[in-house]
Amino acid sequence: MDLTGAFGARSAAVGACREPPGLESLHLGGGDGGFTALLELPPTQAVELLHFTDPSPSSSQAAVAGIGLDVSPPPPPLHAYGALTFPSNAALMERAARFSVMANEQQNGNVSGETTTTSSVPSNSDRVKTEPGETDSSQRLENNRCGIGKRKELDKKVKGSTKKKSKSSEENEKLPYVHVRARRGQATDSHSLAERARREKINARMKLLQELVPGCDKIQGTALVLDEIINHVQSLQRQVEMLSMRLAAVNPRIDFNLDTLLASENCSLIDGSFNGTAMQLAWPHQVTETEQSFHHRQLQLQQPPQPQQWPYDGLNQPAWGREDDQGHGNEHNSLMAVSENLMVGSASLHPNQVKMEL
Amino acid sequence: MQPTSSMKEEFLKKWQMGLQIYRPLIDNTSVSERRKAIKLSADVAMASLRKGTTCWSRALIQKTATEDNFLVRQMLSGIKAETLINKKLPKVMCHRKIVRRSKMILRRRQSRSAIEEVAAKARKLIKKKTQGLRNVVPGGEFMSNDVLLIQETLDYIVSLQTQVNVMRSIVDAAEAGSER
Image (cartoon, rainbow over all chains, first blue to last red; front, top):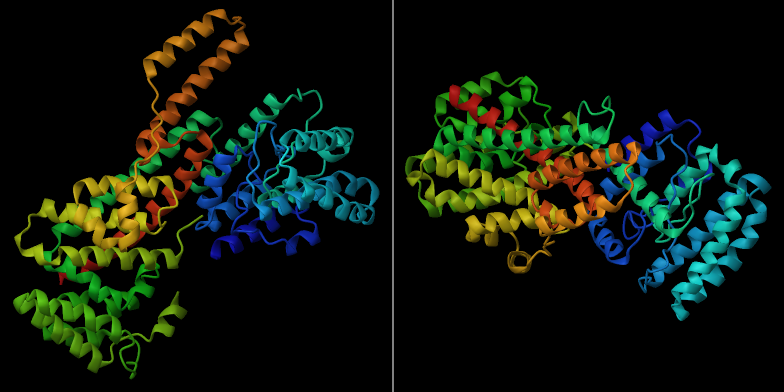
């Protein structure tokens, strides 16, 4: 999707040191993992998120990329919180295993080279994989706690490196376990860890929102940013109202039939590559239903007419067939005239050509 | 995250499908009714792009279903329509007066350091803003936590942007055409 490319490019540009080469092979697991790993997981929310991010992998990937861009100290992803009952999903468990393994690797990786951790990988994964059989959350918590204890020692070394953070955030995306690193001088009980993870999540999302809403980058402070977001949403909604009003005010035949005609030429028009040629070629002349206007349009064509069959024959026929049923008198006749002329007159854009214009 | 061309195309197709449903009525309608028809079909098209995965899309579909049930049923392919229309969203019932009073009681017991007061005020302000955001985003009241709210807002903004872009290009084309 365009999105991932754009974000990937941006992160590459901005991040500099962000991604160790090994990570590039990391696919972002747009399918199931989604946000869940990145976020702390009360299981119901995790399940929701799983479903949520499924069709919009772009937003999750954007979020992850956005989070990867964060320059602040590494995010404290939260490990399985004691009260959680882990969703009994083998795939998730596997990913959790992989993640906890990788998380350990992060801590050790910078210190003692990466080869040594690979050996620990299979053992950890075995250990974690046996867990689902027991479904003993307290035991899991203990394991993670030990992990955290070890990690705390490596705190100082880890803080400086952004590589790890991006790596952890990338890994997090696939896995349900989100491991929190306690920073120096911060409380480490589970409540504040949860708090902190939640806050980090919210901040990450807010950053994304800031990027999305124009003019929010400069603003400091959550409240003002929220204000801006609310204004933006309201303005968009008002624009929709205005546009629908304008469309309704236009000649009544047009707003409902317009679209059928437009269907055949949608690509170039909609993508806003609304240069003069596109306008002339595609659209407005179809709306006026006289032969004169049609010839006028043909004269204005700047491209040599394409002598192929109307590419959207299939699409147009049923639409105009439906018009037959509605029986809209002269309007219908003129539309049919236009369509016939279109088919004959080769005033159409070849669909491939249309796409190339974009 | 900007709207992609594929999203725009899909939206347009669905919107057209919705408008087709109104076709038999165009000669008899006033401007306001046409506007309503256009807006409703655009909204449902936008929401159906998400196929019921996001909270706001479900809420939006339910909202338009109250205004024009037939349209919604036609626009969404059979099965989904039934489930979406009839499903009750999990409502977070929050009796504000009770909550406020209990919070006041709690507050009286807490220590009153200056820093805490400032932080408390900031938190209140942010809560007000998030409440404002919930009012704007469809289905906001049903989003139980802030994280979900912000996620939904993100998605909603992107969808609104596609909707606006597509509608604007069509309106421009239509107006340019009708001027000749």
